[in-house]
Every structure is written in structure tokens, then in C-alpha cells.
Length: 122
Image (cartoon, rainbow, N blue to C red; front, side, top):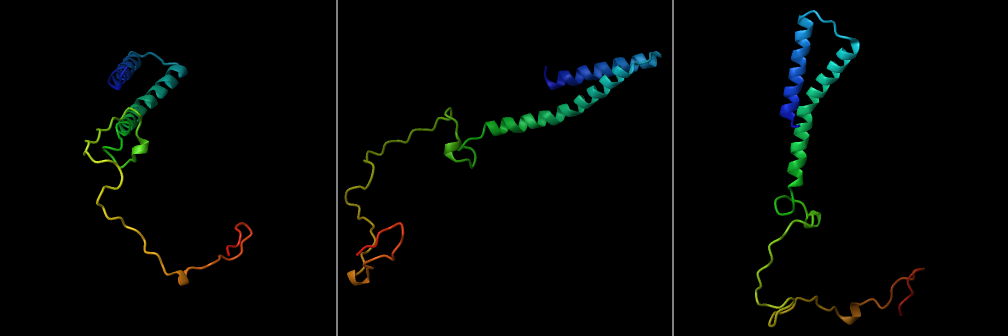
């Protein structure tokens, strides 16, 4: 039963109660309590519907349409395969590497301070 039907059902019950009271019927305390609870439920329905809408929107988020990381995607998210470029992975032939320059040997420390965990290098 969706919320439109729930609201309609609650309105019908309230209308019946109003008709009974207009006809002079006396409602028992249990019936009055049930009506109060029904009104509380009726007020809660729109709040819960909005929460459901928010959660459904969040369910549809993944790394392709939000700032979420790819690791948060479920296994059902299919990514488009990369188009092959014809090149092998890694460094390509003719590419000049980038390396740190070695410092002069006289600037290198020959040993490290003594430590209980690491041995002293000589």
C-alpha cells in the first residue's frame, strides 16, 4: 500500500468517526486512543516518504556521478574499458628517465646515530 492509499484510508476513517460523533455516538477511550495514534502515523508518513526519496537518490550515486572514490562502488557498476593504444605498459622506448642526482661521496654520512633497534653502520 503506497502513501497515497494510506492517506486516503486515514481520511476515510476520520470521516467515519466524524459521522459517528455527529450522529451522537459515544466513542470509547480505546477508540479515541486509536484515533490519536492514527493521526500521529498520518503525520509521520510524509516525513518517512522524504527520507525514502533521499536514500533512493544516495543508492544511485557511484564514483562516475559523484565525488565518491571508485573503491566505494558496488560490483554492479560497470566501467567502460580503456581503448587500447598499441603501446606496452611502463616506460616507453626513447623516453628519458627522471632520476635524482647523486651527491658527492664526501657529503654522504658514513654512519647513523646509535639506536637500540638499528645497528650502527660503519
